[in-house]
Image (cartoon, rainbow, N blue to C red; front, side, top):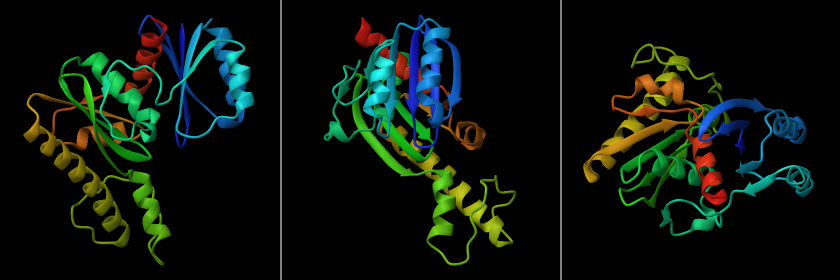
Length: 241
């Protein structure tokens, strides 16, 4: 059994894989991080684990987990099943590394654009030679709502909501229309740009806002909320073998 841990900006996702199949997953809280991980190791009889963290882990936390399981901490030096042509590989987020690993595993020798709609919206492109070229980063939906409150005197911070009309007839409706339609047009426009330059483009949408956005996009996409977890399992398996 493989234990997968994804420590993101806002939550910690865990999963257990058996021979490539996802058999268990849950979101845990940071306060009980180590305790929860040790319990998962014991309950599911896990032998190998990988941790992807966009933040910083404490050394004592790592030591406690390492004492119970064969552990890989994903970083820029970890072996991956693709060629990385990013000009600054040490600055490439581990979450994006995992997404690309998932893409080459599920769509080998294909042109793939991975869109991760979470705290930020990231775009990552791997070509049909399994070579990662890079992509783009923009603010996520909740970040955009928060920025209006942070950088203006009177605009409120709202809970994301699909706009009922293109033209908002109140300040709240204007904010929903501006942010949500802005994100949708950004994603559709980016897909169109990549499609013009790359034949037979496969597009994957994942991340915390995948369900909110999936049916709003005009382009044909694969929506997979577990794409990053699957990529981490791909990397773990690749290094074990």
